[in-house]
Length: 239
Image 1 (cartoon, rainbow, N blue to C red):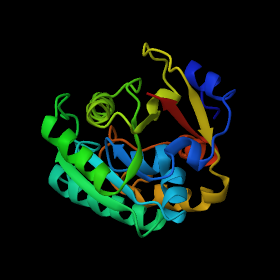
Image 2 (cartoon, one colour):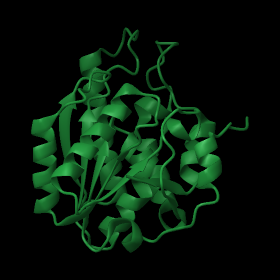
Image 3 (cartoon, helix red, strand yellow):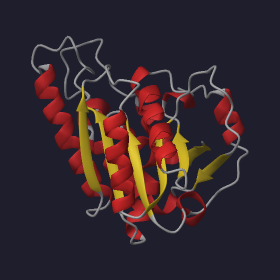
Image 4 (tube, rainbow, N blue to C red):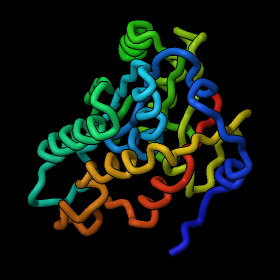
């Protein structure tokens, strides 16, 4: 099966490659993930590269991911939230043991677009680790939690405008979007960190395998999509 990529990805295919310093500057990095697994899919190689370079790195996961298999009889939403919390911990340790995790705990599918307290807390976190960059999901992704997380990143950036702000596409890699075209796109070469990124993605077993097999409509990422995220350069959109 050949994946159909979005027009944005056609443009990204022509974008230049950027190194770690060009993307995040000389300091630390804060990454916002709408759900446990978006961090590994969208920016896992960047997280590992930054932490391996001695930068302080924090991941803020916004929702608990409890609704990916709503009709399962064997795994309740509460149990799934616990599973996904364990999965993201395993994934981050796989990427680098020094990556710091914060979970905001909003219900999957219900992340508010206005989170003033969270934006202040994340700004304080960024200052505390000496961050010079903030990455988050793209508001062109056709998912409400991804758009809400992008809005949260913009709030943090208004508090700390000196941060470099980037977004990473997940579903926007495949689905056409009405979102405004970004002013700048760069690619990050995952090759040196590809094996670790693949291992981190594999930690999210509830999303990548048939671990939960009693909900035919439940989410499982296709093998083709997983391979795409592992083998394709990471994409970062300015602003």
